[in-house]
Length: 287
Image (cartoon, rainbow, N blue to C red; front, side, top):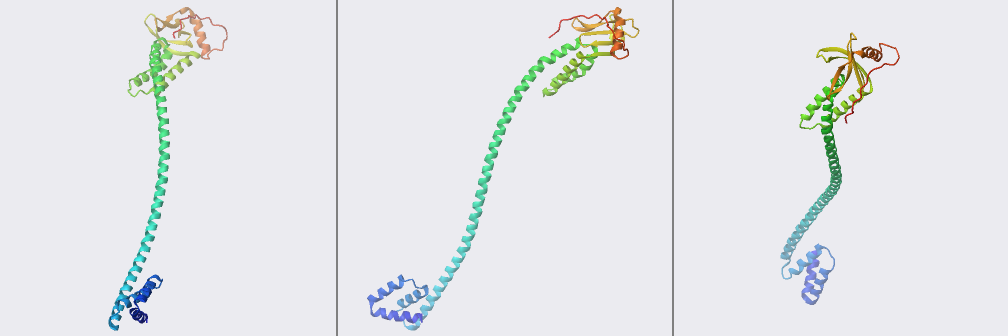
């Protein structure tokens, strides 16, 4: 029926050329369906063909149009699917970009913190290096001084200090320095000297008498201020002190009774009270 309409319109257009142009212009300007436009076009192109040929060409054109429409429909569908996939990929890419931006900000923040921490550690390292230099200088002065004092101390004190000094000597030979360990030993040695100087110490020890004989005696030390000894038989006694730069015992047998009495009171074997007269020598304090 559509084809018949196209043919009638064609015949009419052939008899009136001016009207044919006007109608064709209207056909292509008016918003009609693709199918009707195709039929009119086929009718215009087959003016001098007979009905059978025109019908055959119309069917071929219609078949081609259908294929074109199928192709367009298929391409449109494929495009929609691809478009949806592209949109999804775009959203994923946007999410990844956003995530990367967040991670980049976190890295910047972490880098700032690391830089601040590095600066802090660098300053602490410099401060530690300066403190270590001061400690090393202090040890280089005090350690030789303490070693030089050992021969001037009583034997009972020297016996306590000698293991510390031996360990200190080993640490000084260590290339790693071990400043903290050396300082701890030095502080412990000084504390032991101070403790000895603040108390009365009674002990049994072997001393070399002025005659060259070695004898076991009882000793009493009133700190580092005064020291005395007396033999077990009470016949020999004396005082201790620095002589010629070293600790020595000097015989003074006349003070034996007083020394024995002082030792008995100090170690709790006697409750007798009273004054005890013992000689005291003053010496110049070394600094």
